[in-house]
Amino acid sequence: MSGGAEIVLSGISKRYDTGVDALADIDVTLRAGSFTSIVGPSGCGKSSLLRIVAGLVAPSSGHCRRGDGAQPAFVFQEAALLPWRNVERNAQLLMELAACRPEQMRQRVAEVLQLVGLAGFERAYPHQLSGGMRMRLSLARALALRPDLLLLDEPLAAVDELTRDVLQEELSRMWRQGGFTGVLVTHNVHEAVYLSTRVLVMSPRPGRVVDVIDVPFPFPRAPELRATPAFAQLTGRVSAALRQPTTI
Ligand SMILES: Nc1ncnc2c1ncn2[C@@H]1O[C@H](COP(=O)(O)OP(=O)(O)OP(=O)(O)O)[C@@H](O)[C@H]1O
Ligand SMILES: [Mg+2]
Image 1 (cartoon, rainbow, N blue to C red):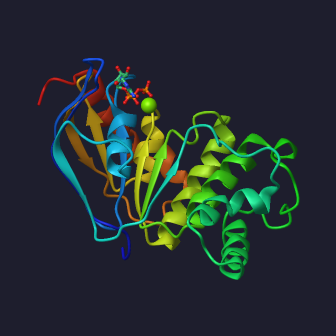
Image 2 (image 1 turned 90 degrees about the horizontal axis):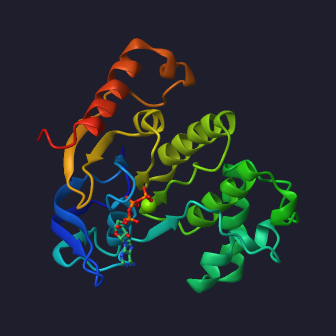
Image 3 (image 1 turned 120 degrees about the vertical axis):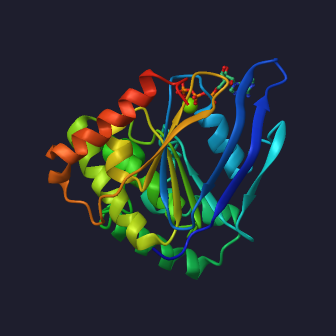
């Protein structure tokens, strides 16, 4: 796997000024070009950790080292599109904020809309798209930045199961083509295993990493992988780690 930024988290803890201890003793290295999922109970600090990796929130102690000049992009659970902008103009939003040249924006927008299967919908408005299409647009907007690091906070939580399976396959394809390091927060153990090279399991708050599970299946992963005994065994292992978070 080539491309992407390496992320080194050393001794990270986070206490908010409300006194809530969200994270404790996080020591993890995410290899360049890897795809890591983070699973854990609600409120255990997953979004906080993702924000620390993105540089949006400072840890209370420890540090997060991102590869030199790494360009992160964040995809939130809600597609967060601007309703008055059409697909094309939503897709170029982050590039505008990054002061990209207009011709570069046009070219990249065309590329990423093709990549996420939205070519032909450039003039449509968000309310004219399905939930899955809105999420694809949100992904396109992040990918247009050519990130070295793509951070995804439950991006597929709001779509139905069939759409979710399809979007997982698309996301996996984009990751293989995109040359970025991926970090995905999800509540869905199957999604975590299907997409990832590694799954981190967190304890209840303050969140600690209680298990690190390498996922050995080669890429590209066929949709049928989800129905194999080996897949069931690994998802079972992640679920068991979630149920017994204090064993390590
Ligand atoms: N900006 C903030 N200020 C104060 N407390 C916060 C802030 N953001 C998060 N918290 C607290 O930190 C803890 C962890 O929150 P976080 O959103 O990281 O959890 P999470 O694992 O993403 O949960 P969920 O699975 O429900 O999304 C919670 O107790 C939350 O109330
Ligand atoms: Mg969260």
